[in-house]
Image 1 (spheres, helix red, strand yellow):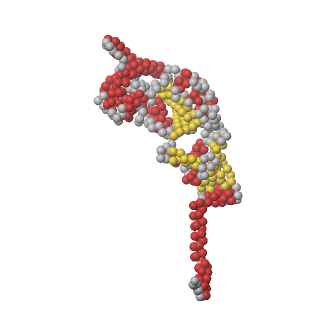
Image 2 (tube, rainbow, N blue to C red):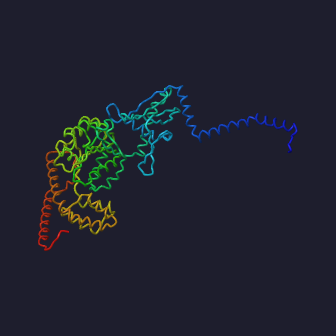
Image 3 (cartoon, helix red, strand yellow):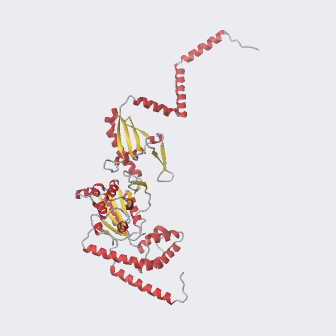
Length: 501
């Protein structure tokens, strides 16, 4: 075998060259930078950087004193803490929420939106004016009470605390103006949780004042009334009254009362609190529910007459009256709309209907031709049709259906407007003659007489309904329908071999 043998001067050259290179400051700098770059890549790729950060923060915390501020969900009076909601909106708008160890993912208002929510007892970091603060999402499983804990260095407290809290208010207001999502709250059984009585879901009802079937004049009056309410805070306070307004919606089922409530909420941009009286324990529990509602909300009690007549709730009449305008209402119902729905005012105690408890009465009758045209435009996209005169003629006889019934017929035949209108005509000639003309005309007469008696007694509460309905005309229509039905029955009896379809 052959071995290569280098002269001694070659070895000397190599060692001296290496020593010169190693002593070169630029080479040393390159080595150091490369080492730290490789170390950083190693930490990021393996996740050790997060462990290192935690260790460093633990060491750093040993040399600082911290102060903690708690933001509970409810105050000492069991009312919802408004600042808790603002902190929640602010924190979930931070990019650092993604850095939490445990984060829940939910579908947003749109199907392709993803919302991040903290798991209990997780931490979010934030920076403000060069200072680092931390928020802890505290959830106690034994009481299901929730709170946010602000952790701030005592050395930074005097410098940034008040400006930081004010900054949260400002960011919240900006976020609310750009993307406020309405919520629908529902009360749960009082035996389950005494502290948190409301559960909510996103309120996505599409109803607006443009889509509901109502006379245009009445719509404009109601929209004007709501707009005036929004601007009347100082006026109400100058009068010594709570800044709230109450509406009574009365009329048969399927006439659009619930859709009108949704249209009000969308028009005002208010959340909706739907109170189920069957889940209320007693009068005090009803007051507690009111205490836990928030400003800018519509509080709804549906089918109030049914609960009071059937005694299907533990709430007494006195409890309902105090809920409507008692001390708790005056103190806690600021910037709220209260809505009560009934099928008829005949069985309602007059004490409920008096001004102060109910400010505006809105009648929702069965469908007439004007409302029918609105429905045809909304459901079928038809503003005029050759069958409209026939429909109008049937309505003039007093036959009628509810807007919900007519809407369902139009939905089922939406691909053919002519077929949809013919199905409405058939329904009006059959069910409308029997049910709408007899029972509901009687209800209209009672409503008309009750309005007349109310006006004569000097009741000046707002009543928005069809004031141009004449009682004499209704009586004539009812007489004509009775005569028409008697003729139909005679012709059927005289027809031999007639069988029911």
